Length: 315
Image 1 (cartoon, rainbow, N blue to C red):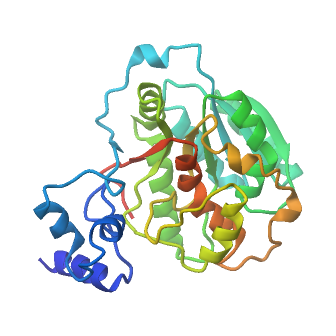
Image 2: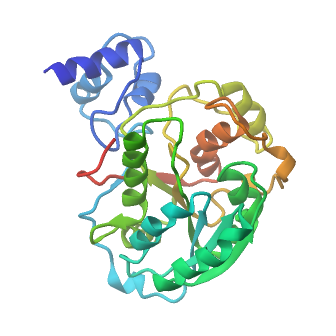
Image 3: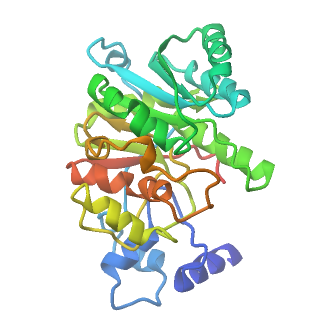
């Protein structure tokens, strides 16, 4: 009861709100359905209304999802994974998660350190993985700059489905919290302990032609914080006009996407001067805005998004 009370109170005052179950965003429901009823619990209102479908309720890809082995054997689809390697010591856990899957994607790796290139190649070789491309990038734009400016147009042109992953350490938070967050992201997007989430995600893409984006269903409901005005200015360059108060986005900037789902972002032709220089604040930059705009760009292209949930792992 106390957990429910805390959840309800969090949505009344919208301080650190969370989701009650995977796939449902109370904030989106509250904004779109309860415009004149701001003080009732959105979950209770949703249940009393018969659990209506809408933007607040998304498909959830679970570990129990049965992938189609015939689809995975298809040679007609091209799959790539972009990995930005800033922290070399965290690369192994990403590679070990990839090899749990039947899907064998091309690896497109970026790093700001020339000295790490040989070590990266060795780690990939020892895990039986082939690097399609490795690029040394400026240490600008965190993981987003190397993704968008470094490999964005190439990966969007050459692959049917692709992932963006990075060695996330989050040095400004507690070490255990950072590790929990990283494990949450990798497990949901790649897999862990025999769980083959890449296979399940790729099959979901193949079965649903309108699915353009997949990312973990973070239980925390974050919004624009300090980024709304930056996002409006940046998003308008891609033709975006709708910036809702509540929305889902890949918190931590790791996700899977379909070819063309994010093309407007790559077509901006951002160069390295488009990103702020280090050291960066914890919020309120174009990088934080891009992270939040990803689902809106996907929807502007006519696609939907799904979320993943590994019940045994949360944060």
